[in-house]
Amino acid sequence: MSLKPLLVTLAGAAWLAGCSSPPTPYQPASSREKAGYSEIRIERNRYRVTVTGRSAADSETTEAHARRRAAELTLASGYLSFQIVRKETFRSETRRAASFAPLPPPFPFDPFPSIRRTELQQPSGPSQTVIEFVMSNSSASGSPDIIDAARALEETVRP
Image (cartoon, rainbow, N blue to C red):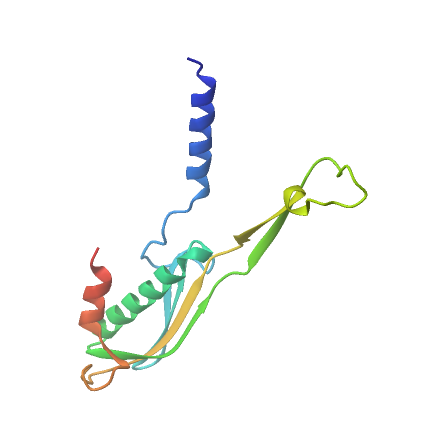
């Protein structure tokens, strides 16, 4: 049995593993370009939280991390609940890459353009979620917009 097919398979698997990025960790961002969260206190009971992911596919993760950080800040500030007053999720634009056949078609026009030219669409950068929220001691049962911080934190920490 030849080792060449096995080596080619292993090399391909290693290359694919290197292309994938690990999920966005829940941690403070070390700088504006790094994955993680940061917050700005706007008023005594109002914050803006920004969570940056590692890839464009991380938008659901960044939204969950932003909500978790809002719950943590609410409880740490001595409040029971919070209300999200602004939420924006930015996904990076899609980059298009074209691949062409190395040889020209045998005809003056190309009857098979889909075979000779392929377009790949790949996200070009990380997603980012920004939420602004107001903290209060209001009961979460009074309004569907008011979120119980302890319950939100419990829901986001579960595996």
